Image 1 (spheres, rainbow, N blue to C red):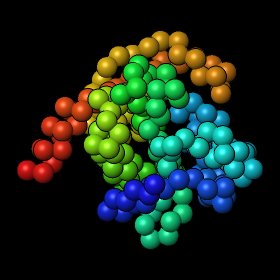
Image 2: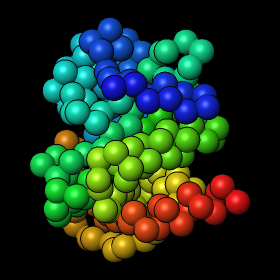
Image 3: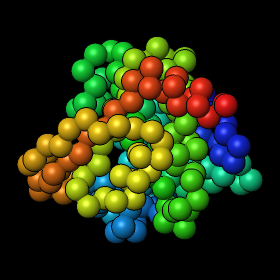
Image 4: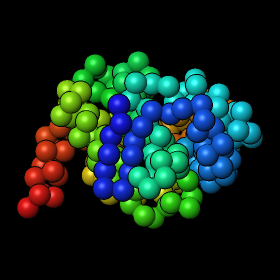
Length: 185
């Protein structure tokens, strides 16, 4: 499945995206704030593509002009999510390379994935979370339209061997429909 927005292609990850992913995922300002270590090699990035970003709703975020992966976005279904409690809920996760920060690309990509979640996949609620201190993710979630749900202390971050404070947001289908109507008027 390939999804498109005004500026982006959202497409399944391919092994050939490993070099591009590594270019951005090796930056310590990308993974560690999101709870995963900076990548050490293109081979590590390839392994992540093949074992983590292989979900049915996992997409490489690419600019339309060159189709090169610059970030990741995924709707994690109940079996892959710590937040989704029913089969009609999922969790949105995302990251984008630092050269593309502040351009509204993740809110654009998320808008299309939320449309898919609510209109095509029958979701009633989408969750999204960030760790304390990850201001970029917090701001992106606010721009997308997520609303605060709760804060959890001592959340395990297994890939980094630590615990953090996590902030959880959500959006219901009714909230998404209201945002969508507001944007059209």
